[in-house]
Length: 112
Image 1 (cartoon, rainbow, N blue to C red):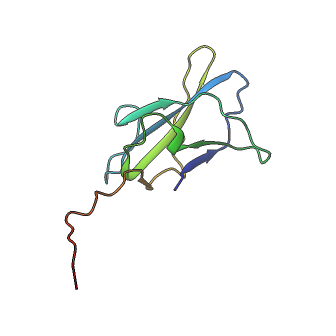
Image 2 (cartoon, one colour):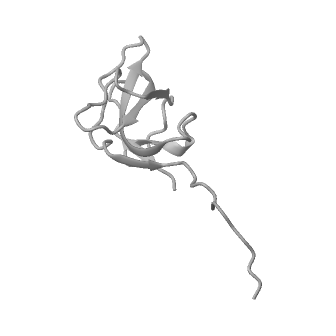
């Protein structure tokens, strides 16, 4: 299963990249740059015909081992290196399951 986060791009014309932040969801702990377990720059994705950008989590390097409920956020960075506040609305409680289950634990051959 593929998981994509879809968002409206920043209206600023000098945005050079977006950064995805995330952490396992913990009651009472808000996602910010300090509590984030990961931060991944994913460049500047294309804007679709409806005016949205999206990032497919499965395609982001380093995220293939995620498994659980995550809170995510996206920020924009401009040419001068200024980073926006994080957009988290709509990205909380994301059920991510990129880890395969373990193999069967035992087997046998029956003759009858």
